[in-house]
Image: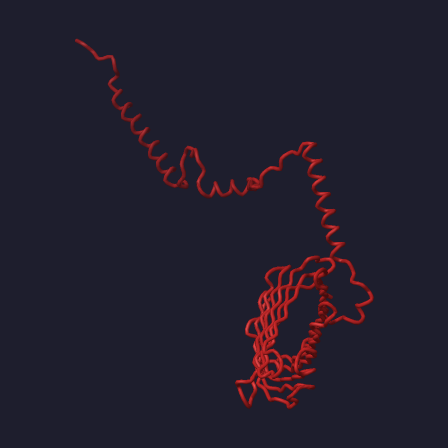
Length: 330
């Protein structure tokens, strides 16, 4: 009869081993459920909190320096350096020379007398020799005083001409004006007077004066346009009619600084007789000044003047005078 190699008690031992294994697994699961929830194995990457702590422990990172956008200076060669030094020395010497020339002090003899007046002195001379002997001399003086509240202007012209020993012209013109600035809002108050001496007129001298208001229509560094209106009188001396004539006065002045060396001046004044507007005087002037020598303030002046008188019994109604003179400004 066949007998088994196992003990008959073997099945009971197997059941006891299985029960002990189950018991151990139950204890392990209970211990794990009561421990904090965390991974048994460490994670390969830290969480946000750990990353922040790590960054705080790291040294600060400075931004890289911005590269300069300026082009690199070329390395000069000795020849280039010598040439540049010579050019710089030449420019500096020219600047110093110009400054010395421009800073030349004006002659001491006129400064105490003319400051703060500004103006010019003009002189002209021409003549002919041959079939006829002619000589013409002209001299003039113009000055103006500018102050914050008023201004004063003076103008003097003299002309004398001889031809073959016979006098052809002998004329003196003097004008003065006074302007009181901004007496009534934008308007200025002016007083103007003239004296004319002419040996070739039916009268020996003519005196006139007027007063009124003026207004600056345009005023800037380049262009100045000024209008005026008022009333006055004129009177002849040594002529057929020595009575004073009441007159109106309308005038306009124009100045244009074309450039540093060129300047244009135009003016026109109309004086109608109050009792008869058909009788009137009119004086128109124009000049062009060209700066020739900036250091010595020498200029050339082309000038023309037209004087109209109606009536003028025994004399010309219209006299036109023109000249080219050398002008010195002070």
